[in-house]
Image (cartoon, rainbow, N blue to C red; front, side, top):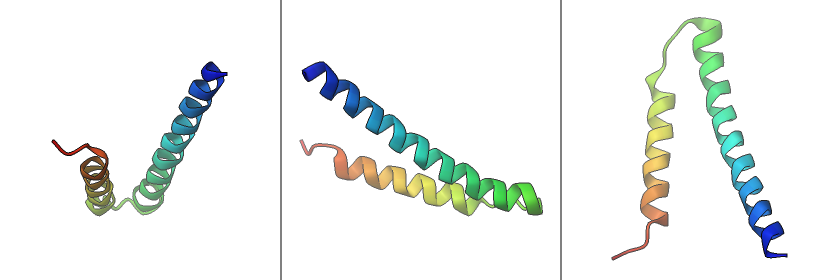
Length: 61
């Protein structure tokens, strides 16, 4: 039963990461693909969110 829980947790984390990257790619595709405008703000928000998430989830020493 523990193997199923481990596999299930892996699949959930894989689905979450796929969802995050797909939303990121859709945002870039709309901005850059259709209009030809490169917007660094989307990547900036993505980086700020990743950094904040890393700070929140890292255990304190």
